Image (cartoon, rainbow over the protein chains, first blue to last red):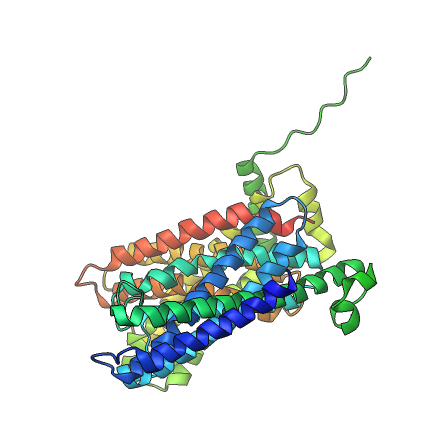
Length: 239
Length: 235
């Protein structure tokens, strides 16, 4: 990816996020029932949106990988990068949700279907990443982890629709249709800021993963831990 | 000019599955190592729950369905791992793969074999559960049998896929439960709820909806496993 696009994504993401959070903290009105506590929504909701997006990208990359007849390291690296970033964002989203839950529900954690299915999703992707670390052969690792990613992705629609299917403690998704018009702008701006920041993180992680794969394929006898950092980050030296 | 030798005809999916299943069951029957091991493991697990909770018979009776399914789940990890370990010895999996048969037959035979083994284990555990936890079967034994069968099928379809993967990875003993446990939570939940309804009565007539959930889980994971399994074992 072009250097300007990459750093542009970071600048745009941080800028929009800063502006969106300023709008959310200072400009938007407090919630009628929850008061200022509700302002954590501008952090929590964008985190969960982009986490779901990252998991979905992981699923698409896994399906595309299995459909190709020849191993595509780009797709495998996309899958790895999106699962890692998705797990990170989803965990951050869950922590902010717990911080929001304590003053509103009185507890950090309840066994609500949304929370439970989200926790299952995070453990599933943690398992996926552990599997990737425990298989040395890059071909096998890519194929097996793609299969595991597809099986794990069956949970994603359950997480997303759980608030509608079961209607329990967790409110339905906050979206421009369900919140006050004055809250829509900060939510939108924060969401786009988070999206660009996520794309930047994924681009960085993707390049690292791809370089690791290429180094592994170029040096089949070396153990993954043995590749010097200088080679792992510059595959042209290996080839 | 002589005609070229006829190529060996591919064996159909069903005959291949049955042949592989027969082979696995025969190995199991001749050694009985796997069944014995998981029976004693599951019995010990059931016993441990009563020690962990103390001698509170009311609590044990109330949660009996959950303990029953946890014992089967823990035992299933042993059974699933073992089902691919026998193939790893003497590179047997390569031999099976070289046969002119559909690779999906391997999935079907292993998954059906594992489900049968777990169902047999469950059937043996029911009287133990009745004795240890003081439960009664309120509705019908047939319902309990159906729950047992559906629940074991639900554990063994994704379990077979993951066992095939983890049997070739490092740290396989950690990997299989780590991958399998979060995935089978919906199946475990519905099997436990349904079992509790059979043990404590079903005044609201909820059994069918839990059985429906188990059935849906089975349809999804048997389908996905059937489609994806050949990719796992290819070289």
